[in-house]
Image 1 (cartoon, rainbow, N blue to C red):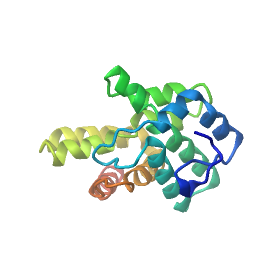
Image 2: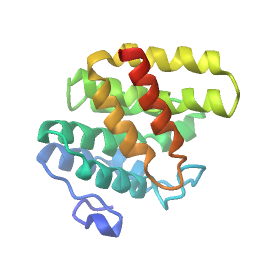
Image 3: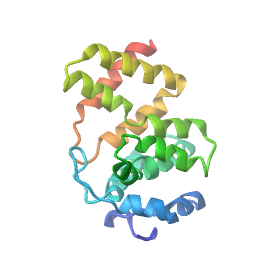
Length: 183
């Protein structure tokens, strides 16, 4: 996979040297090329999902520096699902975080990578497994953990969730929970 192909062809064009460096890494290229369609991810490859997330980030009305952070999260957030699959674990967020520690000490970005699926998991516990108490506890931990940076988490959550055939209900649910716990 090269990094110079166009967005609309399903590939990623880096916007800065750090993105180019990350995208050139063999582990990232392998991860972006990996394909295992699943619920919420009908895209051909992880890279196609990342392109969709990047397009959503491009539409956000946020600062350039936040967009740069969100783009780095998008590029790496699911890229380590291949490694997760090989290890038979549920830790792709931690693997992405560990990888990105080589390139940044941005604590907010690193925490986003680790926690990026937690709000969806909390929603799923509530509405697929009917355990509203556990779901409430988990989402409250996310909101407490991110505190004043919850908008950053929410922006990424929207961009990641509004892709493929993912259920969009978790977005509204998380918005209501943020309003409830941040008042």
